[in-house]
Each structure stands twice: as C-alpha cells, then as structure tokens.
Amino acid sequence: MAEFNRKPRILLVGGDGRPSGVPRHILHLAGALQDVAALTVISDKDEGGFTALGSMPVRHKIISGLTRRLSIRHNWRGISTLLDMLKSEPADLVWIHARLQVLVCRLFLAFRIWKPACPVVFTHHGLPYGPGYHPVIHRICKALERMLVAICPPQNLVFLDHRMAGEMAQTARARRLARHRIHIMPNCSDLRPLPSEKTKGIKRLVMTGRTGRQKDYDLAVRLLAELPPHFYLTLCGPGTEDAGFQSDIATLIPQNVFERITFTGPLLDVRQPLSTADAYLLTSRYEGTPIGALEAFEAGLPIILRDFDGASDLVRAHPCAVLMNSGNLPREAERIVRMLAVFERHSKTLPSEIKMVWQAKWAPAIFSRNARALVRSVLRSASDPVVMPDCIRDAPKRHQDRRKNAAGHVPIPPPCYTTGAPSAENGLQQ
Image (cartoon, rainbow, N blue to C red; front, side):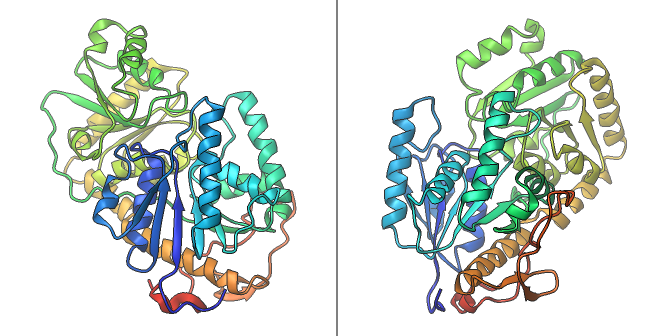
C-alpha cells in the first residue's frame, strides 16, 4: 500500500447494537483511533451499545439483520447487505469483530466471494469452541476453524491474550496458523472514577451480560440461594428485563431468594450498579477476556468467577478473588463469605491494590497504544507483504515455522509497540 498523506479510512464491523462486550470494545477502539483515522462503524440499529459514538467524529452506518437470530432470512439479509457495503465502501483497513460476521466474512474470503483491496483484521473475542460449548457446536466450530486457517488467504487474526492464540495454534496446527499474522491485543475498561454507594448490612453481588446459555444466570441465582439472607444479586444486561426470563428464574429458587434479585435490563452505563456492588460475579460457561471483569478490577471490587477457560489467569492477577467450582455451591458460598470478610477487614488497602493491577494491564492508555501499534503494523504489512515485523526484536523476519507439537506457541510475535510504519505520517503515533 502506498504511503498515506491523509488519515487511513478504517471500517469497524460489529453485530447488534445492544450494550454488550463487542460494542464496548468497538467504542474503546473508536476512542483510541478517532484522532488518527477516519472511522466508520457498521452495526445493526443502535439499542444503547453505540450511543457514545454521537460524541465522536465517527460515521455510524446501520445494516438491519446483523443481530443474530434463529432466522435464515434475517441473517442472510444482514450478511448480504454487509457484503455489498464492504465491496462499495472505500477503506484502507477493515476490522471485523462480531462472531457471526467474523465467521461469514472469513468464509467469503476462503471461497473468493469477497476480494478486498485492503487488509482485513479479524478479532476473536473468544474462541468459538472449547469447554462450556454444546458438544455439537464445539465439534462443528473446531472443524470450521481448522478449515479456515488452512484454506483462507493470509489474514490478520487478533486474540485477546496469548492463551487463546496458543489454543488456536494447537487446534489448527501451528504451522498452518503461521501463514497468518497473529496479533495479541488485550481488552480494556474505562469506567472513570467511581463513587461508592454501598448499603450497610447488605452484601450485593453484581453480574453483567446478556441473557443466554453462555452466561448461565441459572447458576448465579442458585448460588444466591446458598448465601446468607443479607446477600443480594443484581443482574444487568439485555434480556434480564424480560418477564419470561424472570419467570424462569423464579422457578429455580424460593420466593424469598427471588425477592433479593434486582433485574436492571440493558444499561447504557454500568457505573451505577457497580458503585453499589460488594463483589462482581460471572458464572459464564465460556468467555474471552470479559470486559465486565476488567471493570471490576478498575472499580477495586473482589471478583467471583466460574472456572471457564482464562478465568484462572484473572483470579491469579487479582488480590481478592474466588475461582468457583459449580459442582459444590454450598462450599463455594462459604468461600465467598470468607473472602468478603477478608476484603472488609482490609478495605483501606485492597481496593487500591486491585486498581493498581488494572492500571498496569487494562487501562485505556495501554489499549490505545496497542490499537495504534496494531494498525500501523497491519498497514506496514500491506505495503510489504513478504517481510513480517518481529516486534520483540524490532527487526524484520519471515514467518516462523511452528510444528503441531509446538505446545501452543504463538506463530508470530504480537505486533504491540511497533515502530512507525511507512503510513504513519498520517498521525498514527503512540
């Protein structure tokens, strides 16, 4: 790609517009890149997830049908319209995020239905297979990933951590994955200063995320039933306001436990419920790097995580956390009570220690530097597709040959903190 004398045009492709992890990640990207690139966000209609774009110099293009539904007609309408827009919209880089759109656009590339004239980046916000998935979905998605890694033209694949990249290397064979450029770019959170509004005598757990099998809200309310009566639970996210969902929850627990649950529905800002929280709870069957957990770090809260892939990494980094085994809820309830008693005894020091971990790993400044470095690296590779940057040694080298038994090593070092690319004159500076 020729050198830029203007801001690069970047398309950020999401799915639905409800408040959730992917829209928040795209908002973080927009905030990091808005001063150095001409951004266009593509999504389904805004239902609160992209409201913040109104305060940014970012175009927002709506495509009906990008929200996942059990409707072939609905999904095909959204995907076909998206394909037409990707073919017609001028861009120097296309960055695709939502799981369905990532899968379908990679299939378009594999079968040469879409032949973009610019580099394309795909972010895996979580591996589409693994523990916690339905066994049939696990097998289908694992086979699809192996096929796509093997037959797709070289792509830019972004993972939220080295663990996910290593697991993909083992699944798809590291040698095949080495055909592609692998980037590691962790999530971030951006709550800003958060006042505490806790109620004396009450311990409130807060859980965020849309309803569905993944989050397993049933486990969360069954855990509440094992906790003492001064424990309360706030469930936040799209679907929690639905009367049918609440009726299903009511059948799982006694009425006096149900009365200790607050259902907020989708929230434009999670600051209010987190300000009332004594701990953050996440009972997901599977996750990538959940932004809700990072927000708990930023808020200085204890965390209680189910043992999904990657949860142990977050718990090890946290000064006051519980990694929960869903098979023995009475025992886990006792552990949670003890943990919160420890947190209360050390309430003058532990919140600051938790926030320091967030500041070192997931602060917006770090995310912004990584996002700009990744864009520079991708644009550089587009102008020199043969030589790949080795970002650890800061010198060019060709793809590494990692064998299947490479124990999950990442095929290419992550392009974080790279030096300026030939196209960096447009302002893509750290």
